[in-house]
Length: 166
Image 1 (tube, helix red, strand yellow):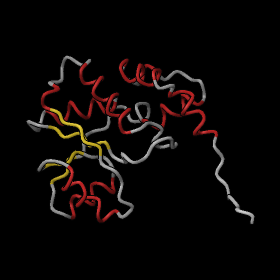
Image 2 (cartoon, rainbow, N blue to C red):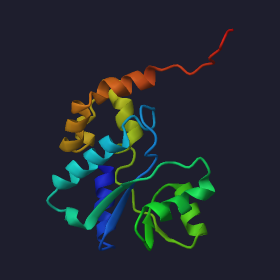
Image 3 (tube, rainbow, N blue to C red):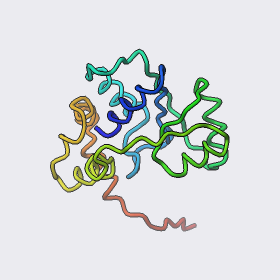
Image 4 (tube, rainbow, N blue to C red):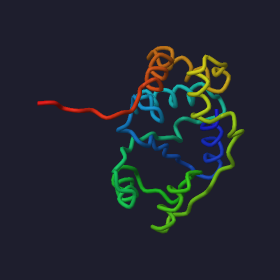
């Protein structure tokens, strides 16, 4: 719901909104449990289901991480159509784009303490109420890909050392 509010906010300022699916190379992780394709499906279905949004004004592009923050904006410029404004609340993203002279607008976060992906994943792990925090379309995709089981499995993973014995 928070992302949807940000998209609506951004569409008031631009004719065409490029929605970047960041960390597109990441999935099955605590911070990114879903694939880029699944995230695109959640966003597209949610936009299609919202009668206030003209979907023809949006474009979604997955962008993988580079591992080198200073190179990330260059990669963005290679992968997405030209843009003049970036909407972001992420401090590092804002710094990186400002450093290359791009205007950055920081949208007001919509009920951030509740409508955060971290909070939603935490509630799923704890078997707590979460469906009202996402669109029905997102909930449906999570159900279809067995996302609840995936999130719980990812959160249950232990990090530790691995040894190879010859």
